[in-house]
Image (cartoon, rainbow, N blue to C red):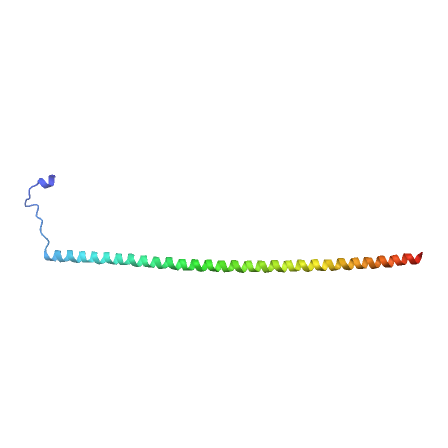
Amino acid sequence: KAASTVPPGPNLNISKPTGKFQSLLQVAQEQRLLEQRAVEEMAIYSKRFLEKQRQDAEILLSLIKREEAQADMILHRERMEEEKLMEEEKQEIDRRREEQRLKDEEAKRAEDIRLGRGEQADR
């Protein structure tokens, strides 16, 4: 308020922009406009770049997930094959034990018969 009440005097000599100053002001405004456009273009470029990076990351993630799924399937298949082989081995062991048990029973019967005949002959 105090400044507005001061009457204009010879000490308040405010000159209007000269032609040289006006052209410098215009150059500065154009420079600022160009800088603003450059910043906006960089922002657009950065946004596009980040979007591309995000898309690439999603693609890589899906490839990794696919590889993991394939690895899981391979592991499952290998486990199933291993279990099948172990079951076949167990069955083979059981079959051999049964064969041996039958042979042992046959041998015992043969021995019993031989001993039984031998006892009959002693009488």
